[in-house]
Length: 112
Length: 115
Image (tube, rainbow over all chains, first blue to last red; front, side, top):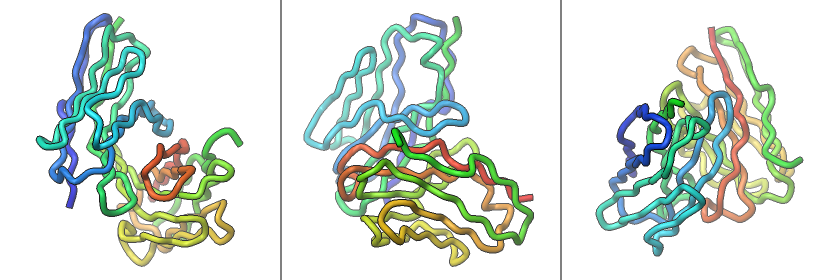
């Protein structure tokens, strides 16, 4: 059974810092990996989707990398802003099955 | 509508009461998913529909949980004889194509509190 772990569980940084969120998964037979953002009381917003054949995806100040063989992904946020404060969730879609398996999330707070 | 709509946004139920949670997916989306998110945790898969067919219900925690999508659009998640451990946010997601090969768009969720 696929298990997804996110480290750290919580992170507090001053505005302007570059930061890295980590995600690991136990079964490397994945179809794709997604990073989501969740604001309090809101649903999930997809930030980046990386297919299993890709190594990274970029969107604005966000860059996600994927190392399928080692079961790891990182989300890099450049020049963090208070508006980046949210919970970031990593989710994988296995080759078998249709659902996403999520990690527990990283709660990020960016202080002005 | 522009996005996935869920209702009600909040539901308080007494233990033993039956509840029904509604999901309106994005128009034309083939796939629909239900997830359960406990406080401080990531969402966990409950069930998956492709059009009106429920292709995977392996995540439903007990036979008290039932989901349907009779016309391949709106879906209802029903929980019978609610228990305190059912308290969670229930998220619905839809996707244009089958399976999870494409981006899933999530609703804001229904927060269920069982007293």
